[in-house]
Amino acid sequence: MKRIAVCPGSFDPITLGHLDIIKRGASIFDEIIVIVANNQDKRPLFTVEERIHLLREAVAGLPNVSIDSFNGLVTDYVKQSGANVILRGLRAVSDFEYELKIDAINKKLNDTIETFYMMTSPQYSFLSSSIVKEAAKYHASVEDLVPPCVQDALKQKFQSPR
Image 1: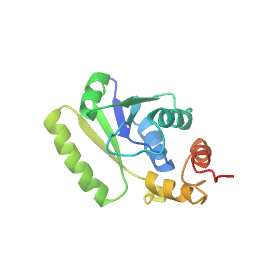
Image 2: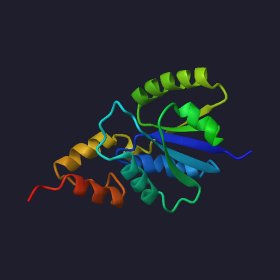
Image 3: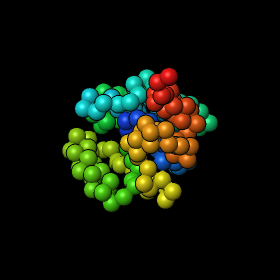
Image 4: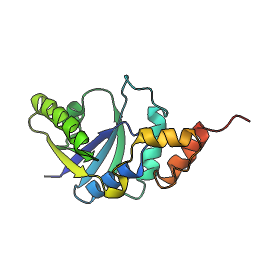
């Protein structure tokens, strides 16, 4: 049986922390499907299409990683894709508390799906897309926080008016 994991998130934008989890997951699972959430409750900086494009560029060297988007429940996506695992990264205990609640709901919806948690590498434990956007908004360097394609996209989004 092929080990397929779905790695959901908003990825607005993808950070090196996200990429670290995806790369490490790709070495464990046969296939990783990264799915971009289209969360109507959030006001994203990047459109779903832009996030998909940035993700594809960031994971270009990982042949067993694909990118998709979804509206709806992750458990529904996992079932329809033929995956059997949800891959999640954890930065801190507070992340685990939140993820534990989500996992309990997911188990109620589909008890055949397992959740695989990976601790974020220490150098990324503070990192979030929100922090990256805030830094980029004020033209701070995000070079050590995001892939080069995201650096360029953030510069475009936060260009100073001339």
